[in-house]
Picture 1 (tube, rainbow, N blue to C red):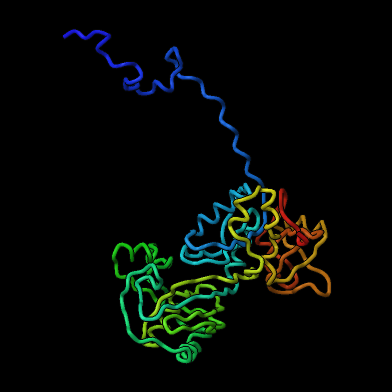
Picture 2 (cartoon, one colour):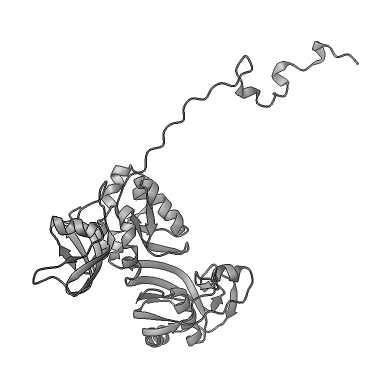
Length: 342
């Protein structure tokens, strides 16, 4: 069968040849222009005290802050679950060397316990594993709290980052394996009821490193004979950082990297719990080369942790032994780093 040109559909109705829309009139692909250069990452050092919102992961929060400052390096001081809000300290640049000092600091939380249901995750995301019609009154909750204050033994939640033979507990639990976690010592300094409506109780807690608020709600519910899980959680303090100095995510994402600098705190704010030693330029250079120095002066510490500054600039942190400062971390605060007056 012969087909004439008149039998073909009009050109505007013909199916386009794949890739034709990307070709020029002579069938050649047009040359693309040069890609715009990405802005170079900057040497930014300091702490950002982020007020993380519910739904955001800690990893995503670090990425947002790093992008807001166009910084080369960033990390957080203590994971905050997506279901939790509140203080997430994020270290930029040289501040990442001080992360352990923040993670080892005291923490404060405000959390809501939903009574009557225990879940496999010990929070509102989990599957119910035990229920009760019993509900405690405020007096009963307050009477139970002292049993959880002080140095106690706590079994972490099944869905936690604890490692079991190299595997994370939450990965094993998601695969259906029965996870048996061993109780660990933790320190809880304060527990106080701030609200109670029968179905729920809002509690404030101050505790040390490694304490799980979800486990606390679970164990409190078991003691009261009514079961319970964390329905809401907010972290209000981490080490030296509190809600009062936190900035919302929008304050960093809605402006320029220069505007974000208003929320950058000095690296040494993470070291507020240890003594500061001012040293001369010569001693500062020795410390920055990793060499120990003898501390002189009536107020110089003779033992323990300390950090050294030269002309107000952080140069090293380490241990003082018999009057000698042995540096374990040295700092090179070039680029962008706020001073204490910032």
